[in-house]
Amino acid sequence: MKIILVRHALTLSNKNNTISLPTTTIIDEGKIALDRTKEFLKYYEFKKVYTSNYIRTQQTAKYLGYYDFIEDSRIREIDFGDFKGKNIDKIIRENGEYFITPPSQRLNLKYPNGESRMDVYKRVSSFLDDMEKQNENVLVISHGIAIRMAIMWVLNDFSNMDYFNLKNGSITVIEINGKKKTLECVNKI
Image (cartoon, rainbow, N blue to C red; front, side):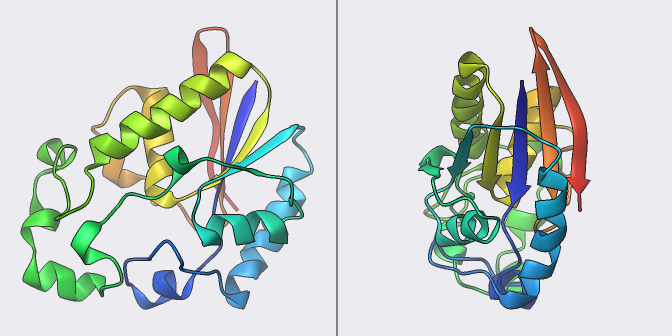
């Protein structure tokens, strides 16, 4: 079975280096990458499409031609708490400890009034465990950090967590064959 993960299309927040909100929408410029994504998806068969409960993933699904999707909040982006909607450079200047913390300690560091990466890993893992039990190919339209956590689920190793920079509209494919999990591709666009 395969879990085909697609990161949502480019948003104005992505372009302007700000933390997105649940209501952040995709922009026309992001649809260029999705046109390529559409072509790549023709090589995969799947019966179900899942999106997060955030607008940008659902808009991405619809642009790709999938209107009959299942919403699942476990695959949503990390909750950045008080940082939502703010400029990332400004956040780093004013709250650098959240970004200079060594990677080995960053996994459990919660954003103010938000989540930690481990929180995201637990909910994404729960979703992936359910998909594995269903044992059928699925398309999952999600977010950068959530897809990174899916990669960590395969690797069972967090040491490289921050080295996967997933592009908007990119495809990452997890193949599961019995107990064996393989990354077929990462960040294909």
